[in-house]
Length: 169
Image (cartoon, rainbow, N blue to C red; front, side):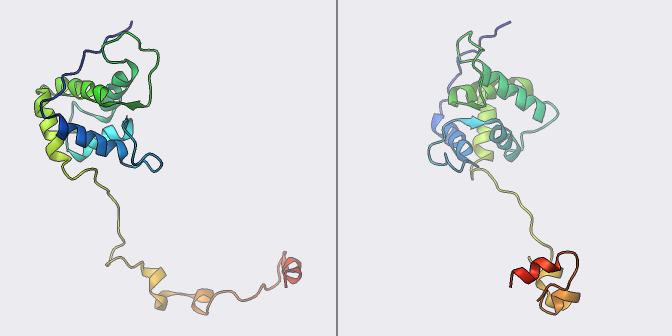
């Protein structure tokens, strides 16, 4: 059964929503960082996580299905054969409409939360070493033991491959 996606309702504040869309399109793209205009599923989910819009109704699975539904059908047509791994801005708006319907809120309210929550752009999350960034056994040379404490290996001491070391001198 083929499904027709409705024509998206482009928001009145199109600039703010489109700006957020383009920032997330370019996030994590090394080769396409300046020219990316399509959103990946990974960045679609990241947008919802960064805006803290995940709940019991909007789950990872639901977002993936919404993204796929928007990517599979061209807006306003019956052709669902082409599909893709990226969505354009119109398909993004359709996916947001699907998410707003599932949450039971107006599309404009969801878009306002997205614009407010993603005001600074995509967030980078990482870890740092405990104790101000120093790695305990790597940076503190008083903790070193055995061969490393004495400057490291200086020669090959026999063993099964000792004859190879003599040719490399």
